[in-house]
Image (tube, rainbow, N blue to C red; front, side):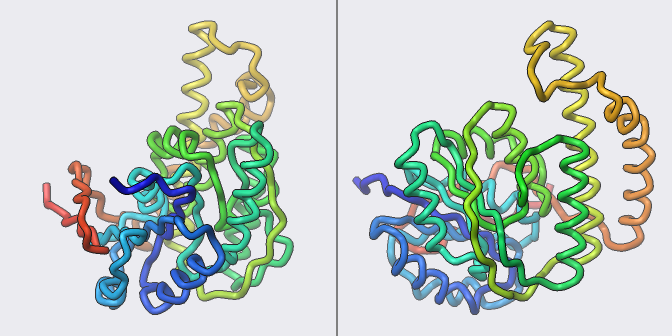
Length: 301
């Protein structure tokens, strides 16, 4: 029986096959020896499958998808099959070095009141599109959810496995906005989260305007679901005095009516930019195997 690894690192990847060997080598060099690497190739059209076939270690597990479902869905599925006692998440292109995962792991092991460590980038090399995306999302998330974190979109997070499993199991967001839902669910569970200062090197970006629109749509849907959840719990007289359940504050009285027309407008523009990503709602099996590649075939419904 394979022993439980101390750490699992989930790598969502979209057309990053050429970069994955260097990322795997860097993780093996930096992280504990028993670290498990879970790679989710999300509809990649490059040679990712061929490249990963060279890695025969049982510590490298791969999910290959023929249809792109989004970064949030990729990370969720990677966390689902991760076996480590701690679960780290970084980008396949190593925008943030895996050594910061080791620092986050050390903080979690030292302070048992913490359940997650997230990156806070002090140096942020990026293109104009991603910079706009980052700035807009930071202010919108603070306005809607009052999240106290400075950098929710940083591509490095480390969780205790039970917390990650519980949070990601309910994840609905499939786009780049998944970080906000994950941290929000962590926050309302009253889990301890620490921000770790990190550096981000300059990398290429697959983020486009259509993905920005799609992420904004999911963010507004998340907000409306959050408000509905609060109203239900208030009527049930549960957690009436919780600090995050401030449904009757002025900002919600203004934002709630505006969120619906904003959602319609964003959907209208997104319809002409690109069709929504194909989603397969079928239960896709994970096949434990000695082979490094676990292929999940998409079935039409």
